Image (cartoon, rainbow, N blue to C red; front, side, top):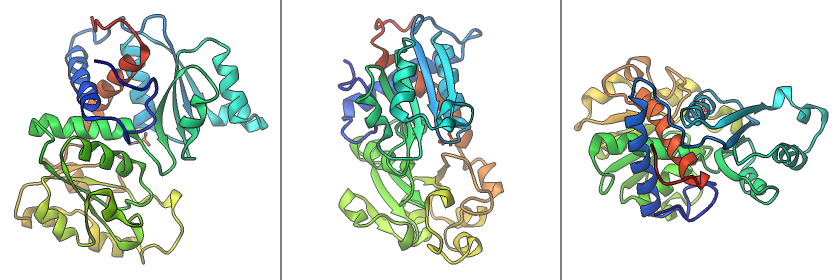
Length: 310
Ligand code: CP
């Protein structure tokens, strides 16, 4: 079996078998990552460009490590040191990079739709590493891998996504992925941070954290994305923390055990208290570890390489 598209632009439209294929392939790469020399020649001869127009710690390092573990040649691009600063357009930038003979592009951009636009400019395979408020598919895949590793299966699991849903590309991709895999999803947050007509997405919606804590097995807690939102969507950070902040006390009082995920970066003391982030409730660093394997799987499956993982 193979992925239907040459690109990974989002999880909308990616079917259950394809997501399962990516997660199963990532499991094979987890085994390789635990070897004394965690490297295979699977992408030898392939060149990948990491095109980051927006800041990133986890996603950029994770993709770069995944590429190196697969023996791809990698090149990193960042806006601040490029000719974008001299006014070069996105189309000229990508066409010039492709003229140097590249196979794949990993792109992050503050504008939704840039990965799709790039598929129309070049022949290389395009992987979305986060586009505006649209999608962040590899983050959702690594979230699902982390949950699946704990639960065994995503079917029937209850996952609440808590916080700033409206501005979150992580929420967008998680909703598509989790529903496709048979999980139930609740969106929980203030009305002002909820997308319009959220119920039409096939999810539950609540504006009380207590509902999520009573209902969910897994809580994926999101950062308040101040860089993407207008002012005045909630009174103060302190008020937000009082209503929606995940505290140890709240988790200990909850009727059921919940597992805490967070895509990072964490605003400690806002959406998540430090003693929760660093507690046994949290699988945040497992998410980061699993991210390398997931990105190896996506790169491999989109590379058109020989099926042997080696
Ligand atoms: N989760 C995530 O996208 O983190 P970065 O912004 O650090 O890549």
